[in-house]
Length: 277
Image (cartoon, rainbow, N blue to C red; front, side, top):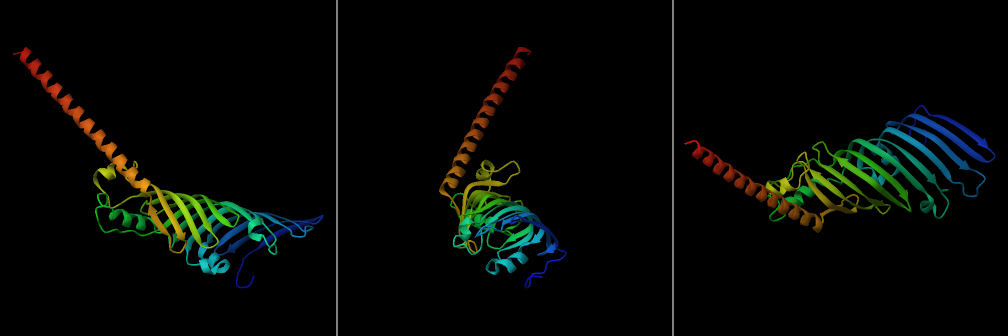
């Protein structure tokens, strides 16, 4: 037990050799999941020793971890976290502690919930109000209750996502990359796929994937992590219009070609009938 943190079945091994401490540890229950610190190395002979660590977590409950480690963020996310992480942790008393600390990893969150990032809700609402594109229908969405897949680095005091993918039970999906900062601001750009957008007809036909989800490239998520703004970029709307125009032109060509073919078939049939009269 460490303060109010309860760790069950902690197992550890360590070795001190010429001033270098190496260790490993496992737990069967920490924040509702298990963890394994596969390797730790600390040069104790250094005046400001750096800690190098590789670890895995499995099924850790995010909200429990945030409540203990960062209470101000505790209501931001829920779900079971599984992943691996590599850390270079500077000595805490260094004045440049955050600048010298680096973390990289991959993680998956199952049954996750991000309270502020209801991307499908926001995007559907904006689409429904676009003149000539949205149909004004009332939007119904459950927000970002989702499975989340991410690859990240913490460098120069910023959490950088090479990949932050979120997919909801309704098959609404955000594929993005960007940054979350220590001042609790974020900046993500990516593509959104919507299963039931407030758009039908030619626009929907021309801008959907093979499963029928509307595709929106160039979505921007920014501002406070607790209440972000989500914008559809002007280039996104231009792409919608351009693909719709191309789609309609191709339909016209196909219809025109079919009419010519039908006319030729009718004429040829008539001539054949005339020959056998």
